[in-house]
Image (cartoon, rainbow, N blue to C red; front, side, top):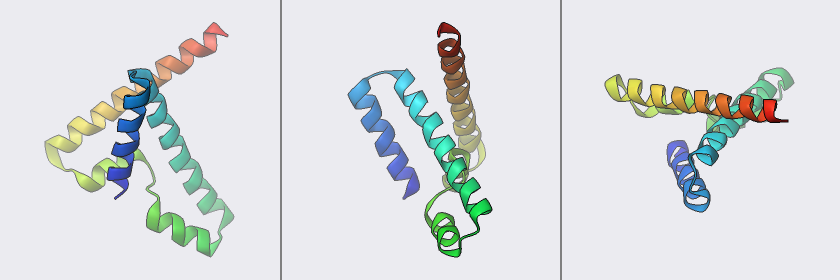
Length: 99
């Protein structure tokens, strides 16, 4: 279900903004959000939060890809996600130096 939700959100972002940059920023935001939620889960040690996060929220986008693919498809998708993150980093560095 998590893969379907992520794909629908990416499609909505691409439909409304029609720009590769917005999709890349969205992937970066989602990745950071997943990692922050899991960081909070580990360090707050609240049982209800831990159960909720473990059940419904993946650790990262890489884990979602690993859950639904294997082999060559997995390798291709991982490298595509890696390329998106490199693009995201380039956009962030350019924005940083413009300001």
